[in-house]
Image 1 (cartoon, rainbow, N blue to C red):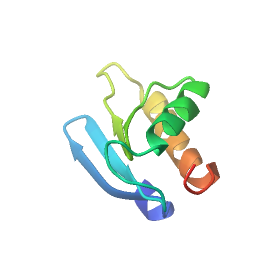
Image 2: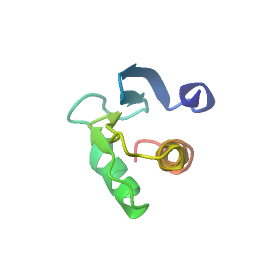
Image 3: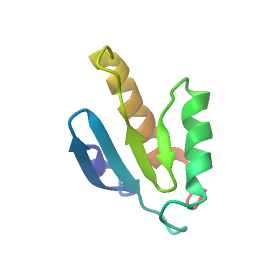
Image 4: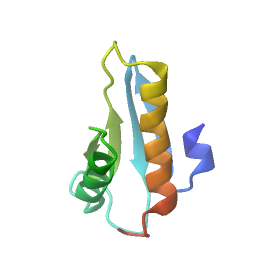
Length: 88
């Protein structure tokens, strides 16, 4: 699982097709965390519309999403967790 491979990711959870994972870093946490806009920009630059709310990354994939497209989203989350500078 992604959270086990990346120290910055924690508390993965899922309800139906909706998934969320916490971004843990030295910076602030919660809804107003500064990492939210950084993550949004990171994902948009890769052509992905993911929904970070502060330090929580949400995935709300449509039912028509292919497995490859979903893998691309999870790969981008892993890339962010391993390449963004601390407290970006």
